[in-house]
Length: 386
Image (cartoon, rainbow, N blue to C red; front, side, top):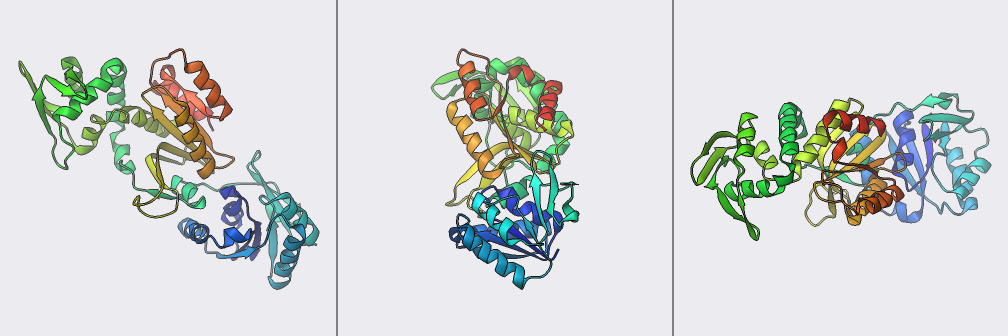
């Protein structure tokens, strides 16, 4: 085909998947007038196709998709003025689908099935006959198609892949000292600096943290030293000093939530079923290239298998309803129908956990708790999400 006709859908994947799969010369999208006048939408689609290597001319035609007669008129005009057309009816409203059926004549028509992950011929489209979808997305693509931009996060994901053994050691130590971890990270923050290049840490054994005082746990420090996560450890009568091996590990040991996020990231990679895994995915909702004066969110881990993104939120504290709602909004906004959401917690169980699980089930969010955080169990749970 030279020309692919799409019916605009609020689910981003339906707007781009046909072009991804069949690579037409021109994609004509019938859109509501307000969508055509939305410059951000046009720019995001253009950026998406450019990023994905689709050399396609994008034409957006304004028409109310709730008015079957007007949609039919526009379709007939397009079919009369363009060569080698095909119509994708994967998206659109009931009225626009009815109009497509009325206007198509002998034009090839096909659709996409989410449940089968395949394209299917409706009429005169043998190229789409029971054709499995072989499109593979990455996290950046998922955000671009929905009008967002993946910004640089606080972690270099390529560098992290070289630190997987350190991540395993860190999580093993965390599990052993989980009950005092939050307070000990507070100690680390008190005796060290976040300034670039400053890797040394020194302070009294007992320091003021928030509204109380924390004493360094010497055994924890010795285990961190034995694992190479700190070095040059010196424990004196009333003072302690050590160095971080690099700024990455320094951040891990100054941030309470990093250890759980790193364990989930590492497990996603070990699962071997994801095409892309990103830790600390910062997304600009409005498609800009910076966080300044923009609506942004940070998603702890995003993993993508084929065209299915999984959004994962990690909590070292109890899971609150607000966290579940936020995760559901992010999943629906940037993932669509085939996306999943998981929330992971290392907090001990309490009486309110049953209510949280009920709310998570209502929002179709999977919950992974402390008992499933060992690497083998976590990998198994993550594979089950595919």
